[in-house]
Amino acid sequence: MVAALTSKELRSALEKWHVPATFTSGWSTRSAYKSGWSDVTGCMYHHTANDASDSANRALITNGYSGLPGPLANFGVTDTGRIDVIAVGPANHAGGGDSRVLDAVRQESYGARPPDPRYTHSEAVARGEPIGNRMFYGWESYYGAGGDKIPEPLQHRVTILSMAAIIDALDRKDTKNTWSAKSMIGHKEWQRGKIDPLAVVMAAARAELQWCLDNGPDAAYNWYKTGEQGDDMADIDAIATAVAKKVLNSKLIKIIGKDPAEYMSLNTAARVTYDRVVNRIPAQLAGQDAKLAEMAAILSELSGKPVAAGDIQSRIDAAGERAAATCLEELRATPDPEVENDEG
Ligand SMILES: [Zn+2]
Image (tube, rainbow, N blue to C red; front, side, top):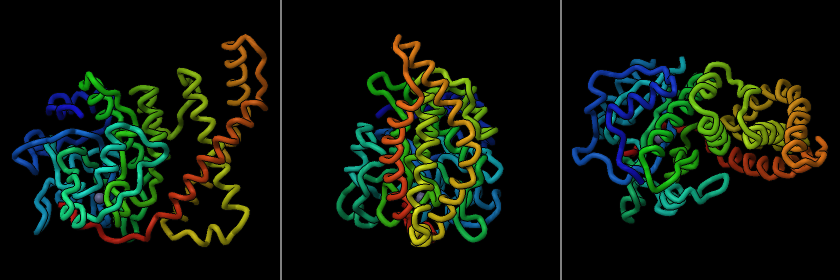
């Protein structure tokens, strides 16, 4: 927990990370709470669940609607991969959650996913569970319904890039705690019954976010533009993460690929995610052998002993199997789309 970012700190964080951003009129004083922030804990990823234009979405997030006043998020995210900066102050986006999730995020003590949330918004309110609005920065990405069910690649990547900017700024400000990608959760991980962000596997999104934090603003911005994490990774951890991610994706294919019924058992949103993974595979496999040879050379040099690419492959395979099982479980748990509401 740390004090919230001032408008000056927020603007320079986005600038430092080269985030394409539009600062909306009034953003630097806008807030849904006169009392301001309380116990700033992390970042939350949402979708708006409508098919409307970016400008209509921006107006909705800024002003709110009958029954729920704006701002409804700190940041809007356009289809073209830009951030609308809506509010420096807390917004009505998270609603009631789960103290068990809150603790796991604060301590960053969870593995691939925080514990499943136990309560709906109204159950959480009735039980006195935490309300997340003043604890989490909120991103509303403009997709999630009709013909706009999945985020555009640039739209997703600018979300992650801007989250890296905010987490980096909070980390620098917080003298007591270290902030990582585990400070970021999806709305579906906070409140039972929520499905957003649709078609985003949160463990994979956190891996992308951590890669950005580990590699810094220039590499992260290049990834935002190209989707490529590049060959200029600074250390062996980053190389291992990149290779493990490739294997994870290919293992996911093998697990589902063994049985077409497994694929058909997934709902539409989960299948969309799966298809997107499949489309990325050929390029990833092509780079894998070269990457393993590179890792083997680096490890041999560091350890002073010969290390074979095959040894690395078998250890990554084991890690990949575990990670793929987690991903598959998350895909299966993705409910069908429904309209977002009750986030006050
Ligand atoms: Zn939401």
